[in-house]
Image (cartoon, rainbow, N blue to C red; front, side):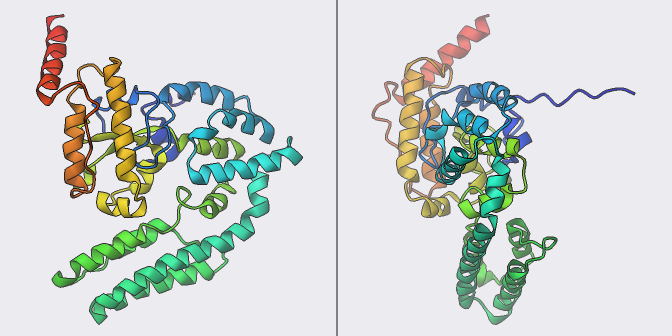
Length: 344
């Protein structure tokens, strides 16, 4: 019988393989961004864990057997963690002090019941907000949406293990509703509000409930991978966004996944500091370009500045005052780089 080789995990497919983040495109255009280090996530403000650390982390993870082993491995990445992951890491750290030889999954199982109750309340609050918005719709459209939120509430209150509330199912069910022409803007607001249903990226309670069913290895990897670098489409591919560096950001995997196809102005409403983080991001990229780490892509700051301004409807206005290249000089630098390669 022929044996199949295990799938080779690379920095390029690591996130998709383990974390199911949005499609990143079958293109090499994002490679110059992936290679950068010490970059601020433009969505969440943390320093992104570079993809070059993945192999080292996986090697260390293979040698983890106890909860204490896992916490020691994660210790070096704690400052890169996002709020939810930091909260979970703190819970695990307290657990390990008393139970060093135990398992992280057991820790989550101990607190799952209380977290599940709080998670249900979080879900109900978002559904309440959705129902509130339906008051602006016609009775027929409002009733169609409320029928779906009512079904969700029934599932949430039902403690049956086999019939659980799934955020994605509710989001997909909204696509079945056909609003009238004069209701499309309100309906868009409703769909965007539904995106705020808690996930393991946005809610500690959702994390505990979801990962209490996972192995210690999966839990540990998840705390690490949320902050690793991911190529994000500013204009989503599903909306016609191109696979080119001028449409790419290097973001944390969690920041990428949680946005999904949410319009950038709505994502800014969720995280008002995004314009500030975007400036920190571009300043970090400029530093890397000045250090020679992004040769051939000197026009990137200008391209991404224009793309962000357009996609955010003017909410993100990047300053390039720290950049040593004028737009004209940046074009010349790219042309010179390409000429050197062509001459070889």
